Length: 319
Image (cartoon, rainbow, N blue to C red):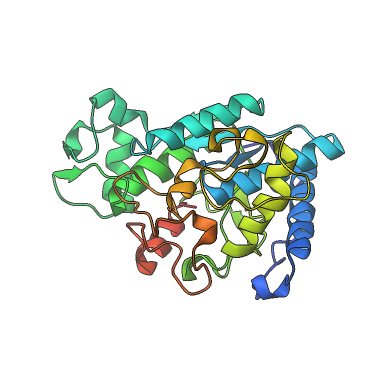
């Protein structure tokens, strides 16, 4: 980490404590707060990075970072894409396409141990074949006592090794002190107590750093409003500047196609939350933003949504 961390920071770690999305009732108020948090972070962290999954939440965070960096002359942070070996192919293609289009510094973060072994999702792997670090993580952090485990980004052990360990190694390798993340208060109980600047300073658990949460105050509806009335018009030259909410693949203005938009293709297909290719299911046949967002569960199509599991994973350094 940069020398002196966190003494060179003056962020308010209590900002957002005991708040909810209701404290920011309009989209404009939510956006104003996101810009404020983003500007504060870009001005104070020496080596920040943006976690980008290709999903809607992290794409909105990326948009705010790019807009603030361009407007105020800050260096655009690199973006970190965690390759957990189980992404939809079109999600991976989306990330690479827009990284090129927006001229982003894209860092691919992965646990290379499984590439070395030639392992695939679903394989049963001998713990003794893993690196010393991964064996230690299983034994000491997860209390895993079996001689084998099944490789899956949707399992407790697999999620930790494929995502958290990969991220922590990337934080160490690139001396990252502030990680922008797209978590929201309304997603899960495990995230409802987060603050806009969240310290991760326990060196026994993870490389010390902070999490920056610019969109805590958004809910699913306001997030899509921000997409169609701000993000897409700003990033797509031929999109109506007043915004336009498409009703499907065939309802885009000015001859545009879904591939022209910084909107993950799975959302057009009816997915509302993206995890792994095996652990995600679409919620409806309608595009995500046309579904009943207020009366149905956003992550219903996701595996690994148990609150206790999420709380344990977050304690280990998961997003």
